[in-house]
Length: 234
Ligand code: ADP
Ligand code: MG
Image (cartoon, rainbow, N blue to C red; front, side, top):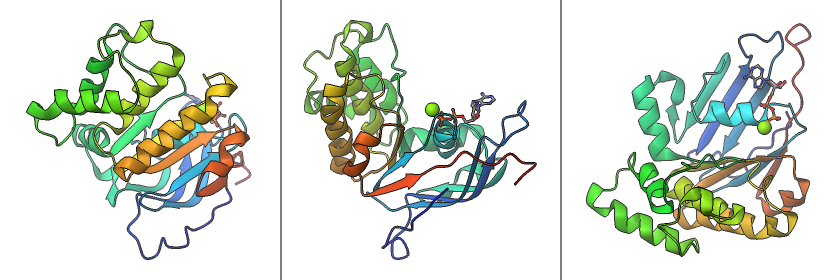
């Protein structure tokens, strides 16, 4: 993987630090991912591109602590995820990491408001403030139907809810996996503005993985990800 150090990264604490990370799925004989180094500074917006199968989604799952690397270390906001137990890790993820998925993974059958409230359950904000905060966020992201059920929304509206949910807890870092893949091309710019402005508004870093090269120039930094060599050749 080609990596470029953020010019100020030595002066700043990192939102993300990843060193010597390899990952191999249990039943696979090949590495799904191999990255020597990747640092992301606070508030920095990084886009990672690479062809299908190079490990982009695997990388985000590892950063989110949903899986442990086979080798190497990953720290988010100075905390090594691998040292945390399951429940501590879930809590840490809920508070400090926001996620936007290609197909959004919202809670169908629940309303917009309920989806954002669910994310706030992990936050440090007092419970008494959750409802007002969720409503404010929903309004700020241009959704005027907080009581609508997810399945009744357009794809564009669902994207807005996904962004609202991702930033609800004021995370240190937002991870986005192909956030524009489900959208018609004419909505790409609006959706990316929404996501990037939302991250700026809460001072979060953004790591976006995509195969959509049209969005690359919107970012502070572009990293190209290569298909890892198989273990036998590594
Ligand atoms: P990308 O998101 O860049 O398309 P992925 O991270 O999904 O790539 O996949 C990286 C590699 O890992 C691919 O070779 C893929 O086939 C493999 N892979 C992904 N998920 C699994 C899984 N659950 N089990 C085994 N192999 C997997
Ligand atoms: Mg993927």
